[in-house]
Amino acid sequence: MTNNPLLQIEKEYGQSIWMDNLSRNIIESGELKELLVSRGIVGITSNPAIFEKAIAGNKIYDPDIEKGIKAGKSVMEIYESLVFTDVRNACDILRDIYEKTNGLDGYVSIEVPPNLAYNTEETIREAQRYYEAIGRDNVMIKIPGTPEGLIAVEKVIAAGINVNVTLLFSVKSYVEAAWAYIRGLEARVAEGKDISRIASVASFFISRIDTNIDARLDKLIAATEEPQKQEELRQMKGKFAIANAKIAYQKYKEIIKSERWQALAAKGAKPQRLLWASTSTKNPEYSDVIYVDSLIGPDTVNTMPPATIEACADHCNVENRIETDLDAAYKLTETLPQIGINLDEVMAELLADGIEKFIQPFNSLMKSLEAKVNQLATV
Image 1: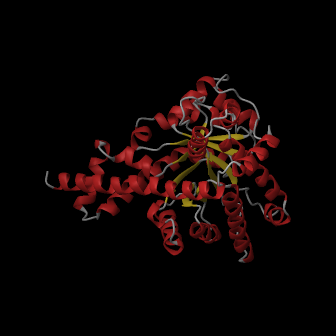
Image 2: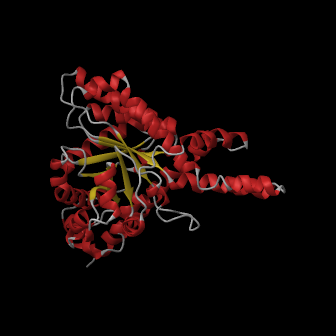
Image 3: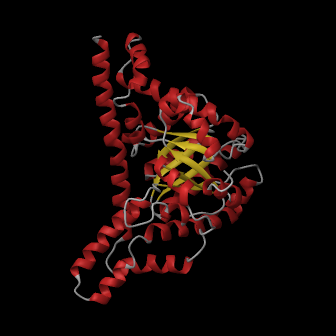
C-alpha cells in the first residue's frame, strides 16, 4: 500500500486525487468505500456522459424508476431523483474526508443541465435548486466556464454554494473563473456572511487540447515537404496541453499573492484550486499516465477516470513537475501562433465542442430513460 503512487502523490506532493466516475453500482457494492482506502480517492466528479453510462440499460435503477412512475413524476423528475440519490449517498460516504480536511476535499460534483451553458439566470436557479434538493454541505455544483456561466459562478458563490467551474481550456478563461470566485466571496463578505466553508475548483481540461492541436500539427506536417520542418512540427505534438496547464498554475500563484485574495484568506477563504480534468490519454502513442505524471504539484486536484486511476496506481512516476520546463511552455505558446495555429480559435472550438459532448449524452439519457419509463409503466 505504501508503494502506491496515488497515495504518494497526495501525501508527499499535496495533490488531491478525485475520481471522474459515479454510479449506484460502485456505491451499493462497497467499491467506492474501498477506493477511498486503496486508491486514496478524496473526491468524485460526474457529468452527463457519466450518468448516461451509469443509468442507461442498468436494472439497478428500475425500482426507483417504478416508484417515480407510480408517483406521477415526469421523466426529468425521475432522472433527478436517481442522480440526486446517488450524489447524496456518495456525499455521505465522503463526509468523513470532508470533515477531516476541514472542507478541502470530500466533495461530489454534479453538473447543472448542459443545455443551460449560455443562460446565466437559469444556471443560477438550477444551481440553487440542485444544492438545496441534494442537501449536503459537501456537494459541488458544476457550472461551465462560458461567459454566461462565469457570471453565474460569481452569484452562486455569493449565495454560499460550492462550485466546480468546468470546461476551462484557455489560461484566460481560468483567470476569469478565479476572479469570478473572488468576486463572489467579496460579495458575501460585504453582506457580513461567513466564507470559510465555501469551496471551489477550476476544472482545467487537458487531453482534449492535445487532440485538437495535434490534428492541426498533422495538417501542417502534411503540407510541408521539408524534413527538418516536419520534424520540428512533430516535436511539438503532445506538449501544448501540459504547457498550457503549467502556465495556468503560474497564474494561480499570482492570484493567491494578490491583495484582494490575501484579504479574503485572512477571513478564512479557501483557494480555488486548479483541477486537472480530461486526464485520460487519448493518443495511444503517449504514456497512459502522461497527464498525471506531468502535472503533479501542490494545491491542485487531478480527477481521473477509473482506468487512469488503475494505470497510475500501477506505474505513475511520482515527482513534483508542475513548475518544470516553464521556459519551454511559454516558448511553445508563442510558437504555435507563429506557425498558423490560432489558439483563441482552438479554445473557442474546444469549449463549444465540450458543451456539445455533454448535451448529446444528456439528451440520449433522457430518451433512453423515457423508453424505460414507457416499458416499466406497461409491466
